[in-house]
Amino acid sequence: MVAAMSVARKTILHVVGARPNYMKIAPLMDALRDVEAIRQVLVNTGQHYDEAMAKAFIRELSLPMPDRDLEVGSASHAVQTANVMVRFEEACLQEKPDLVVVVGDVNSTMAATIVAAKLLIPVAHVEAGLRSFDRTMPEEINRVVTDRLADILLTPSPDGDENLLREGVPAERIHLVGNIMIDTLFRHLPHATLDRVADRVNVKDGCYAVLTLHRPSNVDVRETFEGILSAISSIAADMPVVFPVHPRTQARVKEFGLTDLMKGVQVTPPLGYIDFLSLTSHAKIVLTDSGGLQEESTALGIPCLTLRENTERPITVTQGTNTIVGTNGAKILAGYRSAVRGEVPKRRPELWDGRTAGRIRAVLERFLFG
Ligand code: UD1
Image (tube, rainbow, N blue to C red; front, side, top):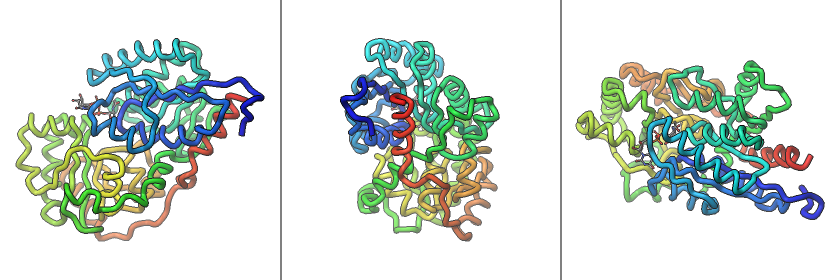
C-alpha cells in the first residue's frame, strides 16, 4: 500500500474499446480504486458502440463512465487503427499519463500501445504472451506488436511467459499474474441464474448448448460458415442450441441467405455479461470461436468445442475443458458426440483464482513508486 502523502500522484490511463475488454479492465480499476497516489483515467475508443456490445457492459460491470470517448466506430483495420491512434495521441497529450494499461488483443489495444510507446509513456499489457502462431488472425498481429512494445507484460499462464522469453523479452518485464477475466467471472457467478434469460430462451439447466461465432475466418467465407451452421443444425436436432448472434455474424447470415440453417436454433441478440454468464454456466456444452469463452468454460468446468484450427490459449486444452475441433462439419459433430458422453476434467489452471487484479496492482505499484 502506498501512502498518499509520501509520493507524487501518478496517472494511469486505462484503454478499453471492444466487448472483450470491459471485463478485463473492471477488476483492475476496482483494485486500484483505494490507492490515493493513483489517478485513474478510463478511455473508451468506441471500437464497439452498440448498446449491447459496449455501454451495457460498462454499466453492468460497475466500470466508471469513461472519462474520454474516442468514438472511432467500425472501419477497415487500417482506418480503425489509425483513428484510434490519432485520437488517443490527443488524449495522452492532454492527460499526461505515467502509465498506459491495455488489455487483450483487439485493434484498440495495438493502436494505443503504438501511440504510448512513441510518446515514451510506459505500457502495461494485461493478457500478454498469448500466441496462436497464425498470422492470418488479425488479433495475432495485435498481440505480437503490443508485446514487442510494452514495458510490463502481465501473463495469464506460463505458456505466455515461454512465448515472450523465446521472442527475446527480458525476464524482468514478464509477470505471471493469472487470468483477470476469471476475477470478473467469479464475482458475478452468484448472480448468474437461468431465470434472468427465461424471457429470451427456453432451456433446462444442464441440457443445452451455447454457440458463439464471430471470427471473420468463420463467418465471412460462405462455405465455411455454411458448413459450421449445417453441423449446428444437426446438433440442434439432438439438444437445444442457444446462439446469441454478433452483429458481424448477423449481417453474414442475411448476405449469404443462411437463415434456413438457423431454424432449429434459439437465436438471440448479443447478451449482457451476466445474462451470458447465466447461459454458459448452466449449459451442457459450449461451441465457440471466441478466445475468452474458451477460458470461461475452463473456469466453469463446462466442455468447450473450439471451432477454429488453433488456439492462443493452449492451457485451456492441456489443463481445462477445451477441445479444438476446427470448422469441418463432420469433425464438429464427432467432437460434440464425444464431449457430451465424456467425463469433464475438474481442474483449473493455476492463478485463475479470482485474485489476478490484486497481483497486477502490486506489480504496477512497484513500477510506479519503486
Ligand atoms: C473485435 C475484435 C475481436 C473480438 C471481437 C469481440 C479486432 C481485430 N477484433 O472483432 O478480437 O473478439 O471484437 O466482439 O479488434 N459492429 C456493430 N456494432 C458494434 C461493433 C461492431 O454493428 O458495436 C459490426 C460492424 O458491422 C463491424 C463488425 O461488427 O464492421 C465488426 O466489428 P469490429 O470491431 O471490426 O470487429 P469484431 O468482429 O467485433
